[in-house]
Length: 477
Length: 144
Image 1 (cartoon, rainbow over the protein chains, first blue to last red):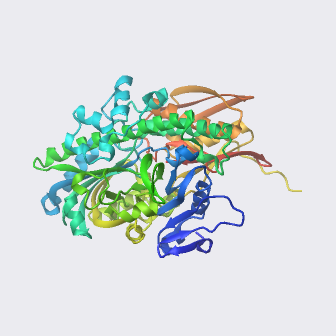
Image 2 (spheres, rainbow over the protein chains, first blue to last red):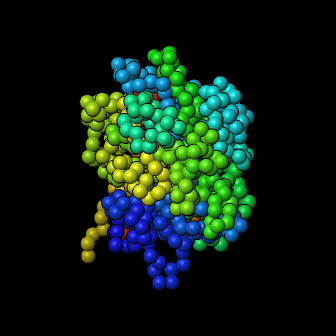
Image 3 (spheres, each protein chain N blue to C red):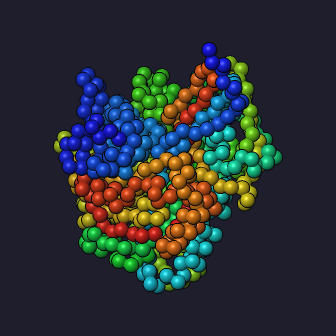
């Protein structure tokens, strides 16, 4: 990114000055000078395009892990007021609706399981459906799928996948309100038939991790974290159903925008005002997809527990938290001293409510909501805690991952999957995959420095670091 | 005056994108460029030479905007492939005004097929369908 196009307004916060006569809202780019310098100039173009959309409240923002996406940049956050013509954008949510991370804490220490890791890696790779073309064992009739879309993780628990105790630690208690399964096309539902309880591919994974470092003792204690502890992170979303909803509504909202007289700076920002039939139709379908993703991660949690139970009968895996990072959610925020109901798009960004927020589970309320920054398979991941400051700065939002620094095409030229798997094994990280090409595309070197992203997230006041985890086993989708 | 370049019918290539992949189809006709863009899209997921054309599907749609038609063509193919658990390697499409009719052939996923990365959908980003002196070009970013 050409950093000279930016104006630094705080040590970790930048803006793009308006050109003379330029009609758009403000933008904020969070991160260090070094991280911003690695970003593509398209990030500036995309976030300033977002700032041109109707009904924007506050600035359009990018998180420190931002990179060039489609429509919105990945790591983009923008809030819209339905009472002021604010819009909902399919491109602001993405195809993998409610992609997110379920984090499980175990009662195991690394020294307890070190000898079992190869067996665990084999068990997980055999029992967790992962990768392109892989289907799960669950087959749902259309009526049952509608119940999933209405019930989310609550449906999964009611049907024997996991425990009621999980639900408290999932956003919205495991079920987002306002789903309209009728707004989901028949093809979207058909695509989901074999995909409940599957990881998918690309950057999706199931990782067994060890807590390597604690930054914040009080928050770590609230989250039940200690050095050497084994955690599990599951990264996936709403699978084929969400992809098809994205597909269906991208073109229909692009046409609706034209019909409704909205001038789109980029057609990918396909949108409709929230208070229109077109906008409400997408919101109903999107909420159904969010519930699908919550149910999917709940089923995968259940499958993971079964794998651990077979090899380590005394292991317990409790849900630490489940947080999505491709959503638009209706939330109350204070703007200029007044409470307002806004629709907050987070595309590749995590919600990060601070201490005292009523939506944060009681156990964590004094320290803030857990936030997960998923790193690459060779480096590590962070758990952070939401801050009060983040509410003022970014509608309570934070980074979601390391963020790509290199295209998949470039990564394929630079690395070979087999070689990477061997190199990581030599470092004590076991990779299990059916796609060596996928491993090469997801090479650790293709991502930004996750330490720098986490540090920038903290320094910018978006969330504070609690713990760093190193990967031990990674089942790649 | 330079001689016009010899166009290899229906060639595909890629362009750089940070998180996702840009697909490009080129052809002597609009339809060939669409078919080549479909090959580019499915080659992200699998080695097309290894895919046996055992099962066929057909599709049709109405679209006046040729750029939106590219996105709809690719997304219909992806939807059918995922719905039926197939991977496609051969594609055809015809256009009659705003009416498009096409199809694809391939086979169900099997263990020994190379797995690439799943394409979730074709986007409107960097979307372009145009004719130049080399023929037709059809491109967009696909989400993976």
